[in-house]
Length: 263
Length: 292
Image 1 (cartoon, rainbow over the protein chains, first blue to last red):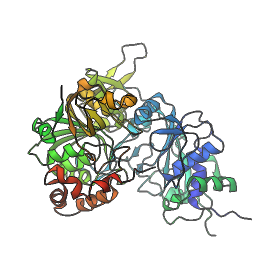
Image 2 (tube, each protein chain N blue to C red):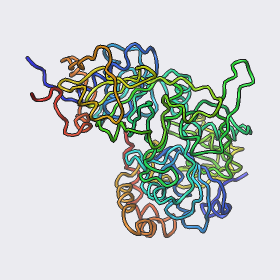
Image 3 (cartoon, chains in turn red, purple):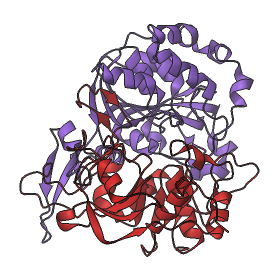
Image 4 (cartoon, rainbow over the protein chains, first blue to last red):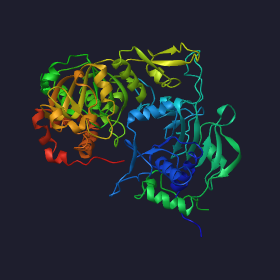
């Protein structure tokens, strides 16, 4: 029997893998798929992860997305924003975030498009990205892998720090930057090639390396053995449905395509 | 000692060009009754400091702002504050955009009377391009590391909304997150609070809630009774942010003359009639607090 699953569900399983073996840290998935992914990791192979209810409390049982419908979160601790900053700066955190632009240096932008003084498009601002990126591990999820997201040049605003030298003041030693994986609707990448070059480490079923390269504004390397992203198991799908009972995950990737492309 | 004031008294004490900080976070616990009173005043050339929500968008739309020092300006479910976005895209204000944590450190430095605090936050990012005046500092110890020296963000005034207060200036703030209200209070020469409930002596009425006191009363200059004064933002545990109201506000930001329409419909006229203009006090009290 072939299990039916959506691309979003496949992405969640790939994204959950980002949190394997990372130890007892605050895991923050920002946005529906990363948040479900953290919950899935915690409920399967990474019970050590600390996570919040999305507001100010720690929970051991991930809080489902959407309307509570009588669900009562069970609080294990308190995590107001003040303590989130303490966690960030201590390094004991791994976030998965969604930049609007990513460049070949692993720099990310959520701040604005165009000139900083008078932006063409004001986006979110740098928010916590500068501090996060030099303090703890960060992975990324991008729902639409295109050249507009993975751009040819440098991001318009460097919100999260990558491996470029350009913005470091003269004589200042560059801080280590820890980018985990970059999960997209096409593949999983990292920045672990020579000189932190971007590499494809897994392709979603039916996607070719050439297709990914054609949708990316900078050159990609192939990892030594490029895997095919794992299909969700029945157990994983059941957990995903429990964590997202109103199927918010269906709204994230355009058209909510199936996980296995039609032949 | 009686620190009770009226909204108009507070705004009369403010001056053009002042640096004003706002407590709360995004569309949560903003001192909106005071913001509306400022909107009704002739104040201008203000520098605003906030983890911002509608207070920033409204004051920008009204042309009262010279500079904004901010970690973000968001309505959460509307990710970018619509009038702030409009102002920014027109190049209408000087924007000192910071990492959220840098704003916290800048307020902390001011409250502790330090010129700066060292941090790694901001290094390597465009924060230093946006704020070219920021300097670095080298550790005098064996590690020799170079840090960003986040300058103190000194406030003339902090405006904060609380749950309960007394006439002495004691306050209590309910809700899951105190945000950085205490840092705003400490960083300011004067701090004015608006409160949902005003009592004579909080120790006689709510002694069991002393842990929800976020800052000492010697930091509080004045207390204004302003029930529902955080609307359209959330005030735990009393009412949630007003989705319908914010959607109309967002739609108006997309219209020619939209700010004037908003101002005339909701802000103009005395604050005492505000609740009725936005659908009545009982409607506000029934606004659900959003979950995530």
